[in-house]
Image (cartoon, rainbow, N blue to C red; front, side, top):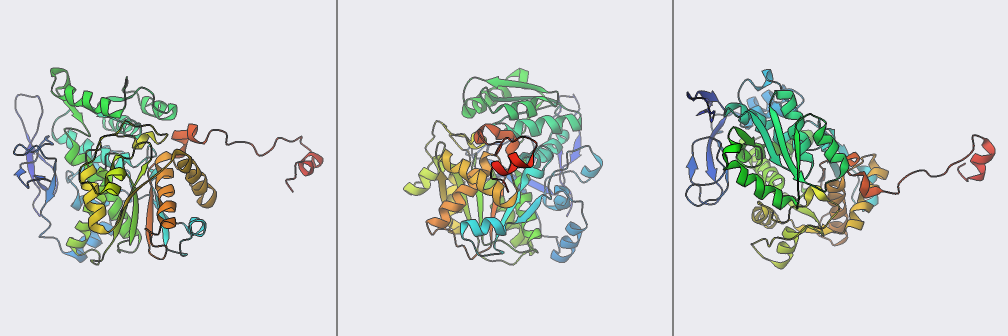
Length: 432
């Protein structure tokens, strides 16, 4: 398929034409109106969200599969399916992806799932220890193509660190915005890369509104906001989770997936990735169910799902799962559509259940998840107990980040005992 080109959004007097890989156009998710590729994110006809459209008609399934399998052990093995320049391998990028799909038989026994049927997709193995590296890697390439000089974002923590690291590697300036009261581990990880880190008094929705205003201000000229004006490209990074899961399962679809919901974009793009694999003939077309997971203290999508609503009513977040604390999720209505279309559901758990699930996953599989991972494991447990998730079917649960970022959630975890350096003290403590 011929590569598509666009004019850069550079502030230079002479715009240049650049290669943006296999992407064909931007298409409105609401009305279907298409526009040329560029740094825009809202439809000019109906103000709906734009996403990348592709023309895969020239791909041969077997040749494409061989090309993917011969590719690097990161997301760029799927370059033919992503909006990236053809020469991305020659440019500095954090190169995330190809993280472990852990066969979680110990967790399966704990939750009552049939042996060999439960897997954890552990994205804590990415460069900055969260799945956000996937989406930022895509945004960096779009920022290069459009001539931006500064990378920015609104973030609940993980994205701030991913942008800081990717900008440092790629040679961009970075300036990112976070709620002022984030977990200290995430603040440090976002700041260490040398970019500017700005706390905003308020929650994530306040931060996001501010960034939307900054885009329209002269001070924001030359800035690529990865999750605003670069969002159509950025969001495509989440598709690589679907691609990897299917490939790691031997080019087959899982029966069930449990995915955390913040903005909802990750879940919608995983579904898009699975549908693309089917359309391309890389996997057998068979039913799958997608379940969304939220914390009770920020569960607008779960509440809407249970009430049978199509509209998501915003909430004020109040949960330890701060990486999911988006009270007005942009993709919430699309999550509802996908959960209902696939026969899945959207469920939530309390903060206490989140902490319990973090401990269960660590104790059974040696995976220390951040609070978002506790949400997905906790919701998986609840779905099984409620009879909504089939314990005999192949199920993939996502862990999207590292527990070292959210240590406050498991405060009190520590020494089993303190003893003298003697066998007598060892036996007195009952440790034999």
